[in-house]
Image (cartoon, rainbow, N blue to C red; front, side, top):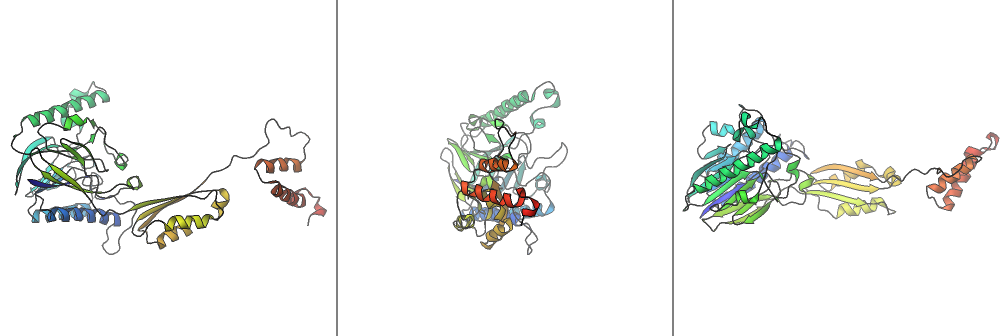
Length: 410
């Protein structure tokens, strides 16, 4: 049996909902991602994994800064110090922005680091580990120019180009499977979207057009495990063979608030592969949503809603629905201080949404000919649904301040 650690979508460099840590000089959200990566590596070392597979999207974007590159290289060095080979395929956030430019992880191939392999094109090859050899078919993020020439695409629509690409991907995978050694276990590693997968925040981060692969294209006879990347939500789409997205290591935004984050340990064996998802200690995101439109003490209701959530160390946002009168006395700065006092790591948006009642007006069927200003005001006040007592009080005030003769005003 060969044991693998399956990771994907590290997105080193996503730095929203945080600040610069004064001790390290790093952004707190970068520290979160690196801590999760360290946690996954700790798990892999403790489980004596034979290899690490990273299914794309190492960095946030295609041009990572030197700090992000340094921190990832340190983690690779730690794995290599343990004698664990690492295989990386490029994702849509890794590929070069233009032809001829290096992609974001190409430097590791250029340096020819022993035991670190970066694959940026569809391929099939054996991977030798201390527990034996397995076969690896790779499908990195596919760019049109990789599979098709400019001449081939000249007269085709985008839809037709996509269909040709899907056909060629299917042909490549079928051809690769046909050439397998039936005695060795096989992994297919891909950075793509499988039809039926539940997507999330990655849709907002998408760089490049997404191809949708049918499940049958990757669920091929002879493949023992399909190691997917690209979708941030952990999920599996089949068991023969297992088609598994480990998901991202950390939450990217509030769209991933309710998702577990982690990695997958795979026990690879010919025709008898087992796998398990391991949840990592990703930073919690909390949305506190409270409606105070129909209560008398809005502040007390908001306080109760806040106190019910364990906010220490979390990223939090507060969404309040209120009346215009309540909005006038609710201060975002006070609410922010209350959340910070609960030791939230970061306080995001505080929104106070007001349902504005439609303006009261004299209807088109109401004649205003001959009515006095006092009568017009009375119609208006009755239109905004004040009770009769309130209407009378307001009319009395208006009589003394607006409608009285100058010498009658106090």
